Image 1 (cartoon, rainbow, N blue to C red):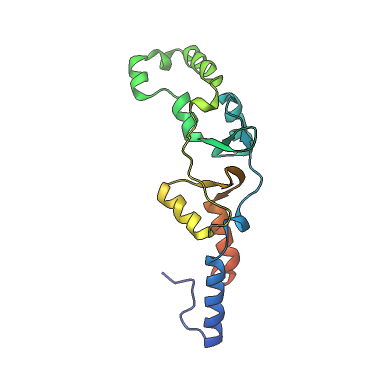
Image 2 (image 1 turned 135 degrees about the vertical axis):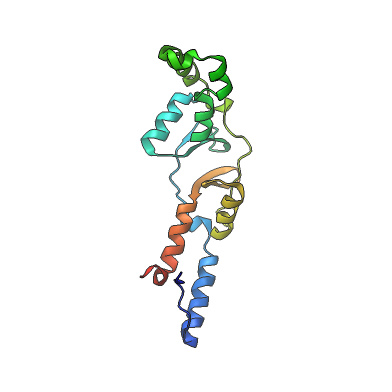
Length: 178
């Protein structure tokens, strides 16, 4: 495997390389986050959440109060766990497989459940002043794809592992050359 990093550098290039590395590791979440976040209120029905997720290709939606203070997050996985029957439920109600109307009734009942009944309340967040690489490490440690960016309990944006990846690629364009 060939390393994208050159093996030998002149002294001036090495100093420049270290400066670029330092600049990248000092990039803040604020520089890479997306300030445009789709949020919903806690009483929003799951039907509307699912529609938003499908329309905007989202993995999750932040739940905020009237003052934009973060109350929770609901992910596509949360919705799937609520909407789809478990293996135990399928064993107890095999009619779900043979009678489509029963699944439709189940979806209809669940579609009106407010998001605050299934959302995750203890949300891992990051500060806009945090180094982007630390935010990335937090995502990896907690196995999440994105984190809300919060200051004084108010949502400022969202940062994803993709945002951080793009930031790194923009900082090191010479590593991206073939």
